[in-house]
Length: 290
Image (cartoon, rainbow, N blue to C red):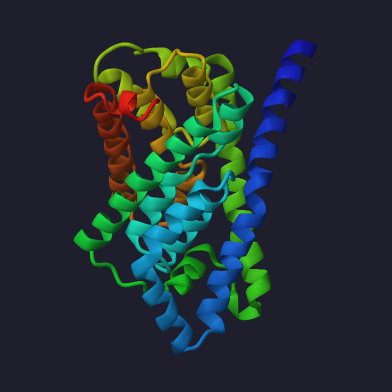
């Protein structure tokens, strides 16, 4: 009984800590969105729209930073139609979550770490700009729609409204983290990632699928297994490209188009698996020293 309680406490603690890391990012996102909706004039809105053209470049660069919150920020801004689908994809693909810390902790050379980051950035930029070219989406603010759906009573002030949104998303992430933590307690991400190791194509696809798990355990497992020679460079890239942290959770919670959310997740999965196969079966990984 004591062992069960200890394990349950361990799962709850890790779930809470993972969710707390995102809290300031979420609050900043909704505070910004509320300010744009209620305080900004047309000039600021036009500036946001113009910035959307360079959004994938900005998003890709921010996604590379060793943090786990920008993907959540991008998902919230996309749901409010502040940023484009290309910017969202660029952030998701560039996000590395715990990768850098794990690589350095496992003793990988700085050159290898920088090469992986460079590859992720190039793929993120290419996918982001291509998505914006194919889907010409206007960045029109729809914060009011989010407020209406969640009943946050925006007229009572932007601070209170932002806090309301933040707590709603935080509670959702916490619940999902507890559920994922419970599952990963019995079936580790390492086991999932190594399940199809060595199987052509399926190995990269499996790693990409594991990367979609909205939990830092996925990126830790993939980065660790690569550093220890268990996963190939292609499988590692496949998993880390799809590893958008809690970004997908926030997207599914805030963006009302379920079809659009599923399509974006499928695109992420496809890009990750395709890139993984490309690097493993064309000699590109060897050429880059990965």
